[in-house]
Amino acid sequence: MSRPRILFFGYSEVGYQCLELLLGRGENVIGLITHEDHPNEKIWFKTPAVAAREHDIPVFTPDSVNTPEWRAKIAEMKPDLILSVYYRHMIGQKILDLPPLGAFNMHGSLLPKYRGRAPINWAILHGESHIGMTLHRMVKSADAGEIIDQEGVDIDSDDNAEQAFRKVMPCARVVLERQLDALLTGTAKGTPQDDSQATYFGGRTPEDGRIDWSRSSLELFNLIRAVTDPYPGAFTDVGEARLMVWWAKILSDRSGQPGEVLSSDPLIVATGEGALELTRTEWRGASVPAIPAGTIL
Image (cartoon, rainbow, N blue to C red; front, side):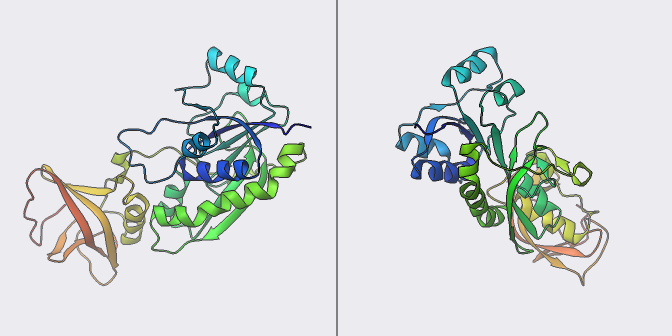
């Protein structure tokens, strides 16, 4: 009896790891639908296209699968099961209804918290100490379907987003390996999400890294570690120049007017509660301005 036909939607290193698991088990992956790497995005992770091409799996990169042409193409592929792992676009209901074994997604949070885009970045920004991966049934609403399984991991209060990502990434493979046989036989058990506990956050843009000095030192430190390299970074503008803040240290014993430069060497800036020592910075744009103590950013 032939193995069920799996159509894999995926991107990022989580997608790579999960596709590697399927291929290592000899599963019948009939194709990968993924994304072209964006020229303005720093690609610091492996992508599933690498694994697919090494195993002669067809790779497709449509701008959208929710067109009549792509719906017809996917129907012709006759998938028995759809697995989505860090695929960045919504998959329409007409496609989700195609596979007889269902369609399932691996999401980078402990649902129902942090539905939506960039869940790990948002979790760090909100100071979470425990994050995880959730396998859930795909429905019309994003990340709202029944939970099949999830696995969590603790992170440190000074982990940046990449460090947290590296810690939580193995959880996806653990969950998929634990549930794969049930998915392939149509016996996976789901638990409805408690919508009253759900939180939803949208995608982040570089502008979301702008520092509001009226926020507390802890809030700003969490912002900095959530968006530091390889993400676009936190920043404050000084005249026509932009100061990128890649790392900082909380100073609870210093205070002043929010945004006030308390020291220029080392660079210490007052926040809404305490102060931050900006320990790793980068000037962009105009020539580097002098910012003496007393300057308000």
